[in-house]
Image 1: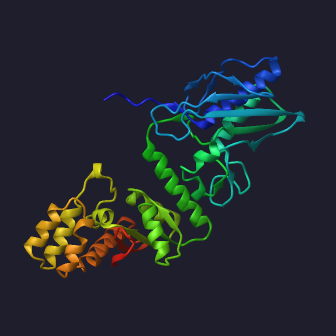
Image 2 (image 1 turned 45 degrees about the vertical axis):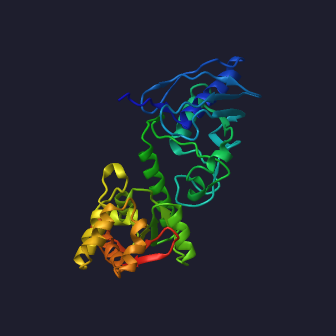
Image 3 (image 1 turned 135 degrees about the vertical axis):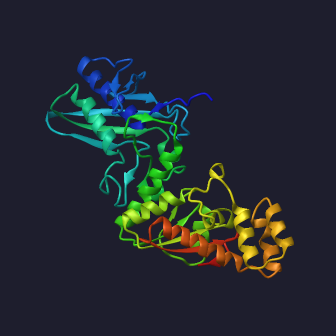
Length: 345
């Protein structure tokens, strides 16, 4: 298999642009290309696009990572002070503002994370060692793109975050997703929440809201074990795990990563629970033949075995509590495709 190509973070782009802006002002001409060294030790040498009034831009290359900002124009403009002073940061077009506590920056700050800030400051200081400066970072189209990310859930409004810890985009989207899950859990905990609902996606969140379950809710995709570990580490005392049979039945079988490439066992788990209830062979065979568990919900109910969902919830709860070593009390709720409750534990 062809190896995936790495790219460079938005933070690397902004730092390169800030360097170019400083060089433009110190040398009287915008450089066509600059070089910075990323925290990972790799050299980034992008082509620089001159914009108005010392604003410089690059086109972000995220490599083979499915990054919504790939191909975006990232800009930075350095406004120099007359006297010595700190390097400050401002949000331009497409960069969000922090509106909720629990992230790496205080409320009201531009969503430019600590490592990119350090990279940008180092770029400025390489040209102007002591002058005060304000660096305005922009991402063209960032406000629109932010709607496709976790940013609104994390309390970042009005645009994207300028991210990156190594300066390199490695095509591991799972790592980015788990980081987002942990950030949202951290934010909820910082807001004082001690109980949290974990759902697999937006359908589960919508269903819980319709059922009047008002506690904070975090979407965890397939990362059940990771989310439970984070809940225990952050000090949550109670977790509600909610989802449809296709996901929650896997947890009932002990699966803590529910993506299909890691395994399945949905039908086998439901069939085993039905067998322990004394269900007829024909019903069990029907479950094993079914492509989806949603397709046998009606048949299971019609034959009088709807309580199987309660049993599966109990098993999921036990596995989830075992994952947290008993540090978190877990409840489970099984939902059908319309958001109706099938079972609870």
